[in-house]
Length: 103
Image (cartoon, rainbow, N blue to C red):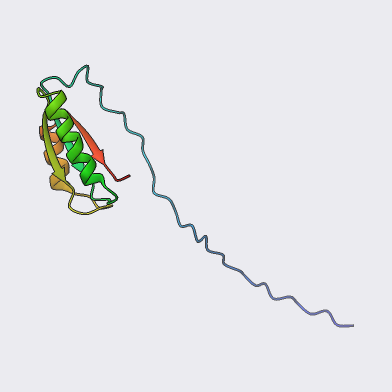
């Protein structure tokens, strides 16, 4: 009986989940003690499902109930995409921001 050599075969398996990006934690902004006299940016994230209507209602609520709070509505250019211009404006001009992403 003859003995035959086995040929080594290599099987390559790819993970379909891919590789998650490295995530680094960041600290939250310090909380404000009050919104009185502050500038609040209301950001429509363009995610659909009514975020724009919510932002409009929020702006009207502040005008009626807290008129000392200055509100500024910002419309993100497109959902799920970075908007450097809007981000820069929020960072430079806002004391706080509400980002509406849809309901």
